[in-house]
Length: 70
Image 1 (cartoon, rainbow, N blue to C red):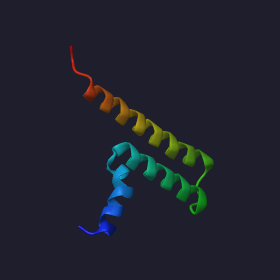
Image 2: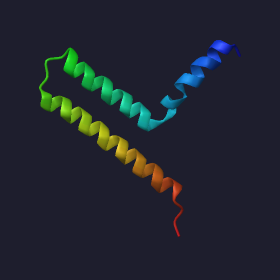
Image 3: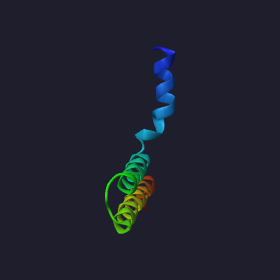
Image 4: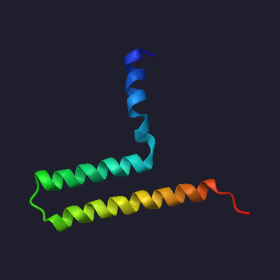
């Protein structure tokens, strides 16, 4: 394995997390909507709200998976 490939893996390893993937997609969608598309501020807030809800849902699911039933 070349050091160039290892370097990319080191920088991109956080993208394996579902929470990071949703966060990146949410920020990109909101930025694209604000910068290039003709959408209302309400739409941008909705995109961010759905992204936050997804991240919290994933975190709750992950926490439930870690906890063992007693």
